[in-house]
Length: 117
Length: 110
Image 1 (cartoon, chains in turn red, green):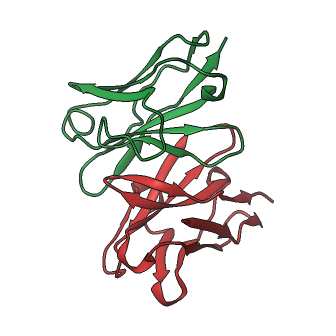
Image 2 (cartoon, each protein chain N blue to C red; image 1 turned 60 degrees about the vertical axis):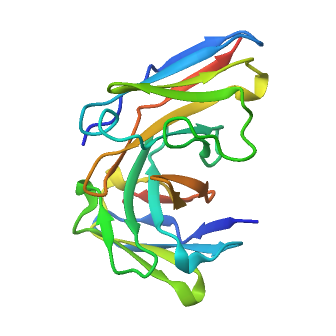
């Protein structure tokens, strides 16, 4: 059974940093593109970034370029998102998702990041 | 990249059909057959319902169907059931390895 479990969310001050993680199981993690998607409270979904199976290619939405970094550790079946220079508008639930046919076929339950002083 | 446009709400009685539109541009929906649809119940993760415009993942009832014409994609839910009440989002590939989601539609089963 495919499982994606996010962790690492929490309360952080504006300008601060946080790293959220996603533990994958039930499939061959090292062969799949992976993405991060977020959802602000009461709002819609926003794709943030994705990463090639071997980590050699990474793509970002313009709004987070230079502030967020996606990475992965295939030995640990884990996906990461480093969030820097956080702003109030980054407050959201952050989901990891497995890429499939230019969409996403499995999603984690998400981890909440709150940016507030 | 602007969000794809969806109606804020749609509704139907049990057994009826409801169709949700997803309007983009010639740079995303109109250019690629990479439109997906997701169902999201409150407090839950999104669930893939349709991929590549009209593909249906294993386990998704055939009551759910997708189509596309020009810059607009559509999701039709036939034979509405109470458990279909949820938010629905479309997404599209948008070139240069970018993806864009729709604004979301709340479906109510009357």
